[in-house]
Image (cartoon, rainbow, N blue to C red; front, side):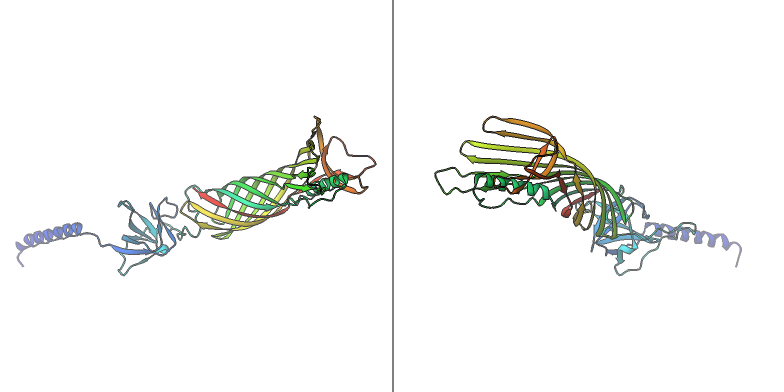
Length: 387
């Protein structure tokens, strides 16, 4: 070949190569489709498990994908308002729809591949940028208020003995309470969260006992009783998640508890007597519970649990008052005492009152400071918010 032809051939090769490059740049990149298989898949800013979540995409959504980078797909998602956002989704959360997958250049050997992506259905809270959780709850709970209940029943029975009339029924038992709760937790890991909380527990039981005289022209004598309990425990909680939607909770709590009574006796028309008292005590207690959580949205979950509480109190101190239709009005500070007092028929009746000193006398039997047992079961439900 003549040496004069070489520059011409070289020029032709260079021109053709340049045209090929321009054609490759102008042709659109091949895209393919992937389908979300997880209940909710996280779309992230970068191909990294620690990258921020820009959108949560529901199961079954078809996404346009540009390429695959390691274990991540670069995809585009169309919002409800027509806008389009791009991000990365992990290969464990999708399947490719029918076409070969374009691969990005492999990462340098020195780079550590990201850990497998966890779905929001697996550990929904731990996926949050700031792993805080707030629980708002309402519950029903049982207590063992024996001294309060026996004191109310004994008071009504003693009044019947004083009148010489049998009661028409019996005093109801204080057993059920309601509880409202607030708790703030920090998600230490997908399996553990710790938190502090505050509950408000309250319960009461109002009863009226009549003593029929058999004479409709007379006012029926009656007794009204209202034992009550109110508690505010400050709680330290630890939750363990053996599976994503199920947890076991252990709690240590400091209880501030108020026990109260209210008695009113109407022996005849225009004559009445009234006793009221409240006393407070403190104690440490504990709770154990097991519950489940169900996602309502990406930031809100419904939860329900069943638990058992252990807390017993004594040494209640407070004030009691007495007033009647004659104008008497007396207030006394002291301790809450439980004892038996001899009634008009000579029998002993259980009573509970606040007294400045231990009740004594020939008609008083077995005086001791009153106790209150908050031990019981709890059924709780509420909403959890995550951030």
